[in-house]
Amino acid sequence: MNSQREIIAYFSMEIALEPALPTYSGGLGMLAGDTIRSAADLKVPMVAVTSLHRQGYFAQKLDANGWQTETPVVWNVGEHCRELPARAQVAIEGRPVWLRAWQYTVKGRSGHELPVFLLDTDLPENSTWDRALTNHLYGGDAWYRLCQEIVLGIGGVRMLQALGYHDISRFHMNEGHAALLGLELLDERARSSGRDVFNHDDVQAIQQSCVFTTHTPVPAGHDRFPLELVSRALGRSDFAAHHDVFCCEGELNMTYLALNLSHYVNGVAKKHGEVSRHLLLPKDAFHHYQIDHITNGVHLATWASPPFAKLFDRFVPGWREDNASLRGVLNIPQQEVWKAHVAAKEKLVQEINRRANAGFDADIFTLAFARRAATYKRAHLLLTDPSRLKRIVAEAGGLQIVYAGKAHPRDNPGKGLIQQIIQTRKELLPEVRLVYLENYDWELARLLVAGVDVWLNTPEPPLEASGTSGMKAALNGVPSLSILDGWWLEGCVEHLTGWAIGKTNSIADSPDARNRRDVQSLYQKLEEVVLPTFQQRREDWLRIMRHAIALNASHFNTQRMVEEYVLKAYFE
Ligand SMILES: *Cc1c(COP(=O)(O)O)cnc(C)c1O
Image (tube, rainbow, N blue to C red):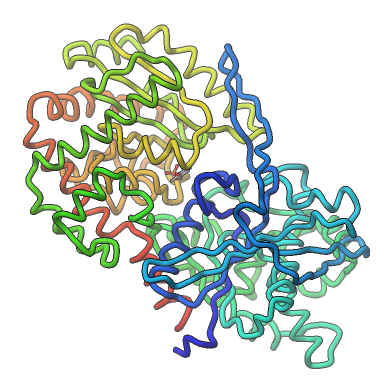
């Protein structure tokens, strides 16, 4: 590997760069951020390209009825990023749209710098509409989204050239939003050989430069645009002629475009790789997709709470440089682990009471459910039978539940779910306290994953591609109680790193039957195993906390993950 010349360009529509910057919506952006933080630590020669999102994703407010409203989060770009003089241009409906890039620099542990270029169309040369193209993450209609993806994919490649990067060896598409970068690479290659249109050889050559990570196990999650929209935007009509690249009937499917133009494709957990292989069957006879998996991770130095970071520094020095060494947590005296947990829990409880005046108590067993409020995640599952839940916890000295999570602005069923949860609050008192905290973000996630006793996850399998918040919890000694889906199929060792809800292979049932069975299993685990262990067998509980860290944080980290990308996708 020639590390001076071979540069990886990592493209992602969202990247969580630091808590104050609203440049991400959730797991995808957080993963992108953790990826580049570990790549910088490992000195991987990488640059990252994303969109600026001048008005952020959104800030969530919940009104008295529990209904979500959204407000923009305007941030001062110049305070955090440096404007670069380079300009690039893309054509949308034949008119030039100019872009600039702002640079944010991620510094690795040993000082290695990884530049992130945030694309911005807010330039006086552009029309008012075009100037707003990099304002909203996942905002607007299909037309707006398509134009945004033209800016990210095509504009991103041109911007890298304008910045002097002529030696990119691999383009990594983190999800399909950036797939149009492949089209630009094809056109570029044809042009440089003096041809107007690309050919089959160009496609094969471009595949060698591209890597694609898919994140969505549902067809509806894949970005698709009607071909007439794409033709109008890009002023070209060669899509039918290149059916083998663009696929499918009457629409441009960004997932298939990325698949067709990549030599290495992966899902984000072992199970998700399998699901993707079934879901993304070739639409014709030309293709045979090989889809591997690289299981996600988290950046440990980012997600260890201060009390645990201190504890690791004392007992496992070097853990930030060598994540796998966290196996050594098994040598830490149990009481030290408990002390660190209590410190993290007290901090969270204080914050909950400050934000919501919720009367939470650090001595009471506390569960969290914090994730995007999409219906398939089944946030309400735990609350299916409030009186049964109250009976279960009455003997165990009570239960506190903290919920958090935003619904996408146009996801009314998701918003309804939040409302339903909030309205269950009164029914649960006094045995169970419940609070729904507004505005789940990096800052809040940091407190939650470390400060609760158990991290709950109840997605409808197989819809959780990976999930990463449970990995953050594990790092802080917080075991998961979760449906066996995504990463938990790999991370769950029953009663040692946490507990499984239900069984694997529950795909065939009707949704109602599955809900009934899963909630049954959830209540049973709480009643018979989790609560009695927490309340009566503290030694056992501390053994579980330490194994959550030693077995799971030592593996489900972005250091191991980036090393896998390097071996399997970047420099192979
Ligand atoms: C880690 C994280 C996520 C992703 O977690 P999931 O387990 O995929 O839900 C989402 N949002 C924030 C703020 C996070 O920190």
